[in-house]
Length: 426
Image (cartoon, rainbow, N blue to C red):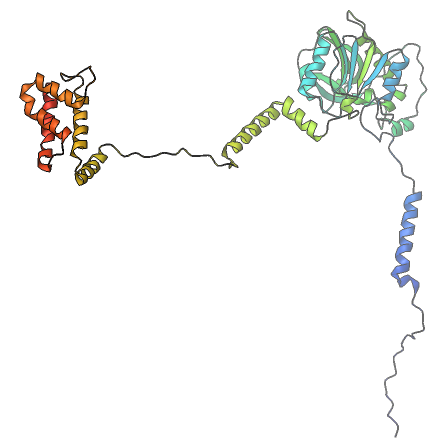
């Protein structure tokens, strides 16, 4: 018997021997895509900006934004140039300090020391920036609007013309160079010296020139100030057309003159450009707690808190409390002594104590006796002077000598009271 054939044709199926397409295998496709991306990134041209690199205006930087050309130019012209890599402001009157847009803000004490250096007869070339706000406030200067720079004129100087396209790719992204100007927030000093100017950006005031680099006298010394760091950048000074190198030399000559001592030493402050040895975390915290008013306040509060903790903290050895012994009042002991004397029949001891008390209380009355004598002799003396007290005195003398019955001893108290009253005139 044969099985009936199906009316539906069988669906085609892939044979296990057929190979799988390679483009569906992730183990092959993913490494190939990664290799192509790496090769494309490696050989693709990258257009870098010529003004990139280290943005600090440092004489140690040869990058386009650095200021090494200013250092080298002054050195070749015969100035005694130096880089200062440690903190502190020099106070030599023959020194010009170059503080060029410092990356580390100047502290209030450093601003004061810099201005005192100039007042005493020194010089300073300052390029102001975001970290010199306190210095600019002291000088009554601020940054103003930007504009097109006016080239510095120099007789007999010829420069190779730079194509506009090269200037666009190499300097201020356009021609002529654009710079920010200075603005006085108070009346300016008399006869300031201007080294670099720009034209006003406002259409209605295009003929007006604004100051970019200005020098003026300050106390016995001189200052040159700018708010645009492009006046000393390497890529700006390499361009001959603007004449920024001429402006820099003229500014140094202005700072050199005008004092009793020629200022031939030029010191570039590199410490505030983050060069040199700077304090670590502990030293910075110590400087903050020592030099700033806020730090000194925090130090005092911390010291007060430590003292409070020491006062309230548990001691390793507990304090020893003062031992107080409560004593019973003598009046509380009268009844106890009386019962004790009554139990043992100590009439003689009780009589001696009563007579001694009477004698002590009448020591300032008529019964006082400066001579030393016994209680019995004292009673005999009282009987001689006061015959009316003979019976009371006899009872007291008997109580001192012999034991008395309870009834007779009870009369001793009134008898001694009468003796005391008589002797004290009561």
